[in-house]
Length: 112
Image 1 (cartoon, rainbow, N blue to C red):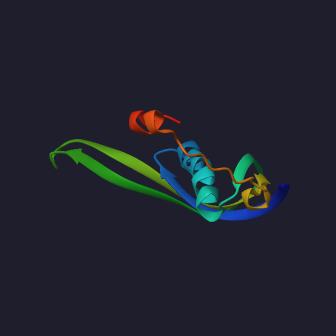
Image 2 (image 1 turned 45 degrees about the horizontal axis):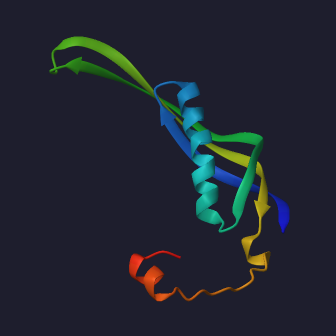
């Protein structure tokens, strides 16, 4: 029923700081795993991070195209993140079937 598996995810994050780009990557882990599996995830443990590519883009920005020039920087990082997952396999849980027939008054009131 409970099992541990290791998966590697390729994720991309971008922000105005290096730390922000990595934070975006780590924020995506839970959502990426939820899309991949139908099992119940009870634990996510990052094991390793390997940077595949890192890009720093600088551009000049002005207010209304004329005033207050400033240089802005944007960082984009693509990384392979290895995670160990603790999963509960819901397909392996034997459920006992039970059905109830509500009586007349309970059925009218919408109660169990």
